[in-house]
Length: 578
Image (tube, rainbow, N blue to C red):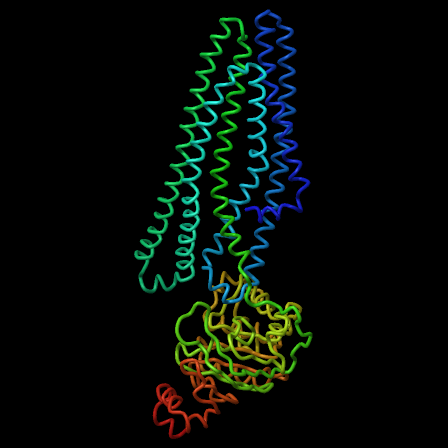
């Protein structure tokens, strides 16, 4: 929690102004009972109406000053806390953006969303309360104690009993509440996770008629959150009756012993009323402190979760002595590369991979599920970092380059085509923000997307829904390819990016890629052999190793595994003809 408070430093002036203004309100609140006592003891007892009116107006004026201080404190505290929350949210978002895929594998998406929203809101509210109530309550409590001692030191001894009893109850409630509030945030993660999965996979849910099962799964997570929250809430609810019991018992004691002192002439009625007012201020301030600490326990749980993300070491970052050389040709060399996922058991995903791809060459990568195809191409832009060996880009080790320089020269179209809310043109311009409309159309034509885009009434200005829900899977893939091509990369990676495209469209796309003036070094992952038959070279992966390498014709003659794949897709007769 203390670390996060560093985010409030830019707003220290307004944060300091809040308690100063609150001090004004507290002073006026402490002064009011004295004026009330004087009205009773001097005005009412003596029948002095002008004195009552004069002192009453004085109380009204002081109340207005106190209200101004309270309103000013609220405004200043809100300004500081809202900016604090915005800065923490920005820092957390930037941190997540800097994560490698290995870092992202440590956190569920739903958990990161909860931390960016609910957890930061909890901490932000805590800062707001701290600048208001955590200033007001101690000042009011201390000031009230001082005033009760001034009025009657013997009667103030009642506080020696009531305050320790209240503090003990507060301590027990807070100690029991902290683990529950930590658990509440975890339960929110689970609800968000179930909800996110269902919203993302709603078509699959409907296709398999799983609405009832998914409703039960959500109900289970939702009820679990409700039960945990109810436990925490019951604990908080227990605090109020206990505090009120102590407060009422204290007031009864003041009335009893204060009445005895009035009868003996040691106190006046107005002083007893002022004493009761101060007693209530003291106990109410302690009650506020109790609720602040309950909120603090929840905020601490949220702060710990935020710090967990901020403290995560990004395992892929720019080297301190990064080379200034920016690749421009597109030669890629894998030199004895071995890779395994963090905390993974068993054999590495890739073992002793070595090959060289020359500039402009098209290399296809085939293999069964789990053979390491996607992992291999993910190593080139350093989405993951290798464990052994090295990868060279135009002769430079990619780990010696700045990440921005490396990734600026690489375009990758992943298996899951992700589009963003906005127009079709905006999505394509992700590849190059300064591209002209003519350049966007030219590249869309190359990606075989221009034709279907023009069928939309608004053409390139058609608004896409979240994740491109208003276009088909094949259209998503072609828009993703257009986005990647517009970047004019040295290395183009197509990871099964035409799986939803018909063979005719795919053939035209491959032909357009071959006819480009500036041809990129291209890595193609595909499930269909027909998609890679014309590649300059084919790498066949099996169990994380390259088991065969060559052209389509060469592999048909030399690789039994490639022959099996070809036969399963094209038929035995075609092997002979091929």
